[in-house]
Picture 1 (tube, rainbow, N blue to C red):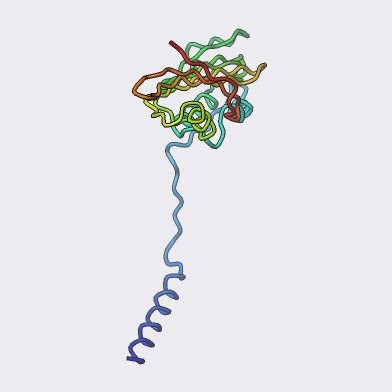
Picture 2 (picture 1 turned 90 degrees about the horizontal axis):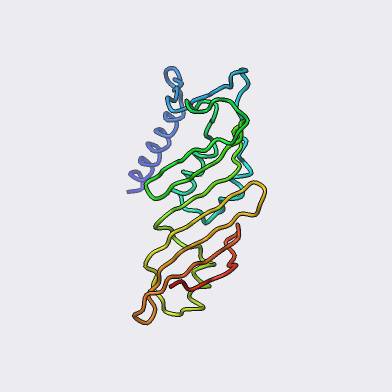
Length: 189
């Protein structure tokens, strides 16, 4: 039995030793989904919308919301067939399966404003606690998330939720700041 265990140990070390050796050539892989674009002046485009992403996203933001916001932040207005290069704001709509973004860009591609709407969102824990504090033993039936971004003003987040409380449905409108802290909660008729 002792010899059997020692034999397994030696075989294990031997296979580990052979797995560390490099045989053949190392191949590189070119990714087809990577796209590098340049402006007309051949200057690489940098994402000028980091401030937008930093303002609208936090650790509680849903993946599908982050995905659509990332697409909007990386959008290159200069490659749009309808962009004519004038210094006027340029509006674009991005649609996802659970929401949309109406974004306005300047001529350099910076996001000036967005109006966003997402359905079937999971409320941040801070807001769930606030609702349950006000309406104990409620059940959440529906939630729609609205985001209003303006590069010159504070971010405005609004949640319209439907809850069931004591066999009665109630519609609530909740406004929150960028960190998902409750600003107001109003019962809608």
